[in-house]
Amino acid sequence: MIVEDEAILALDLSWLLVDAGYEVAGIARTMHAALRLAAKGSVDLATMDIRLAGGTNGVETALKLWQDHEVRCLFVSASLDEETKCQAQPAQPIGFVEKPIREQEIIASLNAHFSRAT
Image 1 (cartoon, rainbow, N blue to C red):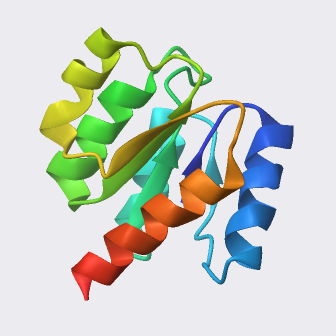
Image 2: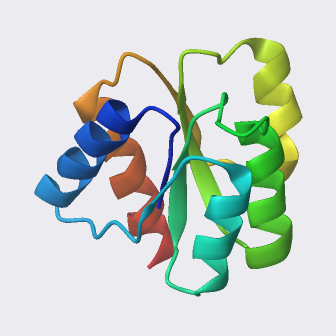
């Protein structure tokens, strides 16, 4: 799942993931949309922006995804200061990638996570 409030960035990320062989369960712009998607049971991992639509944020969303659905996140954001990274640790993120999106770093993070999970 992609959790990103900017439609163009979400589509770019979706195409990148599909081209790399991943299936995208959906795109969510808010915490509530992400939780609804995860509740369907088809989400293994979420890419997560920090600033989301609807007055929610990525750290809070990641914590809820982990607590309620055991879905971990790869944070992909321009807002990744040390305090934010510390706040996100209880959600057990698989990593942090700074925007602008660096394709190789995102794919390497996902590949490393899924190779350890199997």
